[in-house]
Image (cartoon, rainbow, N blue to C red; front, side, top):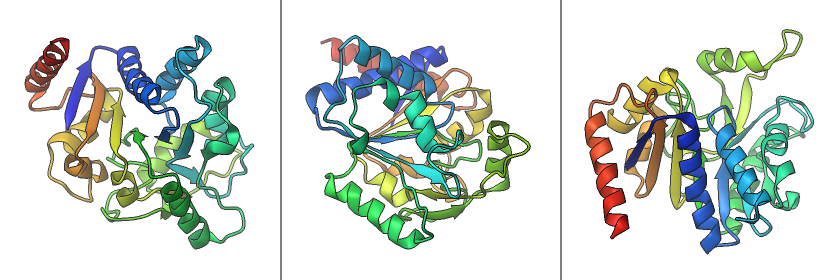
Length: 260
């Protein structure tokens, strides 16, 4: 696990976007796993800027999002389809037909989940999976105690997640309590994973993910078993790491080796 600690949210986002752009420059038909939420907004803005400058093209790229609320239409302002369109897809040269969200509108949940898994496999799997992390350690909507081998499925959201996401919904709106999410096993099959962590409120989840035991009580901790994970965090999110200085040192050495 490579841990990159940077001073600010903007530097974290620039770093993550650079990793994605470098990969696409070598593989035009890259398959990206994408996340929603506040952690990814600035990274998507950098990708948009790079696309507008013609430094990168998404014309042959395919994407698969981690999750989607059940019960929200795609045009609902809080749906993740709407989020992805407004924060990324509408501003880059991607073919919308190549963007996938785990949606279900006919109550055939098992079939929708299985089809999503099949689509990922038919694309050769996910090359880079971008992740945020919840304050309770969830990745995607895989809440604490989720099976570490789970596949795409319907999950009941925890009270913690519902409370944290309530700020996005008007008091007059019904806030979903169910979502379809890629499973932890699905996420772990990505060839590379980039985990973003921003802010003091994410510091415990980040510490548990990087340095804690591997446990379903912190779903993010399973990333310790992945062969290619880059955790990119700001100083606030890194504040509870016991080996903070060591991660700074090892990243300096990593950059030193690249320069040779």
